[in-house]
Length: 103
Length: 155
Image (tube, rainbow over all chains, first blue to last red; front, side, top):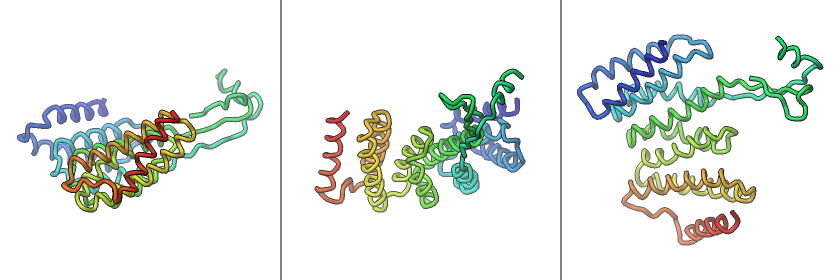
């Protein structure tokens, strides 16, 4: 539910991207999202992706003004972009898969 | 996530961490979106982002390759004149080589992806530069024409 709420904030911000009167509120939201991003999430927690999606939408709103948070955000994105996704291979013992499928 | 290997379902298993792959793809998408949104203000980050994009043009995931290619055009815009012409020529050399390899394999889908990436880079120069001399010499331009001809004839 929190992830959906964060996504909704992003959609709302995108929908007012031409209205500069919201700049201060958007900056406050940005600060809050960064504070959230500093907390530890489980690997499959949808909040983390929702926050990053929303920050990317915020960059469309803030444009040049996004510079004040861009280094921190890009640092996080670079870390994710350089993740090594390993495809590992293992020998399956006879009956192992069948047992898993049955259970 | 575990995958059964076709023909070896009972003996071999491949395992892949899907969460990590999703995080990686999302990171490339977000970098593309931020670079698109910031335009020329993205210039200070070009040096950090460029090697990552270039090194992922051959990556296994098509989504990663696609976003890396699209980001290159944004980096050309961010860098501005005259440095972006040097960057364009570097990107062209790299993509031309990849196009030749992919064309040999008759991989039309990948060929389209690479040509689209190249087109976006060319358009970025055309729309943002006073000096629109994409190629350093007529010979280089000839290389591009030959490349297109070769692809049109074989696919």
